[in-house]
Amino acid sequence: MSNLIGHEAAWAQWRAAIGGQRPHHAWLLAGREGLGKATFALAAAAELVAEPGVPQPPPHQHPDILRLEPLPANEDEVKKRDDGRPWQRKRNISVDQVREMQRRLVTRPTLGRRRAVIFDAADQLEKGAVNALLKSLEEPPQGTFFLLVAHQPGRLLPTVRSRCQVLRFHALNDADLALALDRSGQPMDAATRTAALAVGAGSPGAALAFAAHELGTVFGLMQRLAREGDPEFALRGALSTALAGKLDRERQAAIIEAARMVLVRALDSADRNAAAQIVEAHARIVTLAGQAPIFNFDPALMLLEIGALLASVGRTRENANRA
View: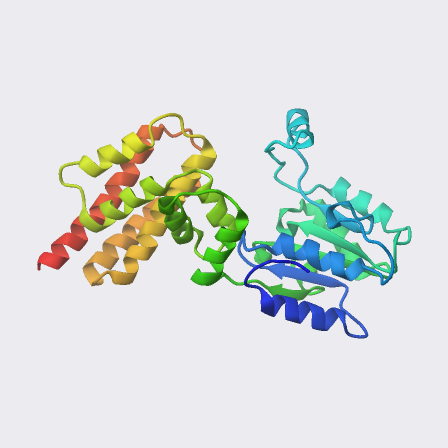
């Protein structure tokens, strides 16, 4: 039984279908990244392959649960993975991985009548890998079920989507997200927790990833910039001080996403004039988010740009309040 929070409807749909006489062989687990779809897939697969009276190994070690995900980027990353350290993955699941999976499907399941194949994530499949997978979806081996995790289902071929039963995952409400953070066991101070709840926007994975960067103070400064402006440059100076030092790409991405969510939340209480400025600033932040992984931005200049965009919103809102 999984302790995954906030997806009772998905569990109900899955268990009703699998408990029927002719359960569908392919499932598309669709929703934004970080909602717990892969965790759900592994727990669901464990229920699927279990046989009464037959001892079952842990899902990660189960011979009848196959998991395909992007491999380590290189040999150094393989060593990091094997040592239990954080490691970088390749961008895609390769066609060779899919073909190796298909060779295993020729044999019968090891412990029971069913086998589960999880793709995490299916929208990271190479083009050739998608075509290879399609053959398995068209002619599935008896007792084999496919669970395709998809953060962007639209990237999959229509022929793949049409062969899958869709299981949708929605953002968690504030109470469930808070509960997920509390149960995660990840230590965080009050400011970081508040910021993670805001930036996560209903995604436990996104919230926990943000919390790991300990940007609670930074998020608070960003909120003040968007609320008060910064005529004396004091807040922007404090922001630069709080982020002094080298910023790797993951931390840069977390900072940009924090600024974007500050703008999204500021829009809730904005009048028409302020809203127009917030939308414009948000568009520029989104552009920056797309450029940051590609271009080698100077961190100090990037922070100045973010600070200026947030301060421009604050000035507009302050002027509106005075009018």
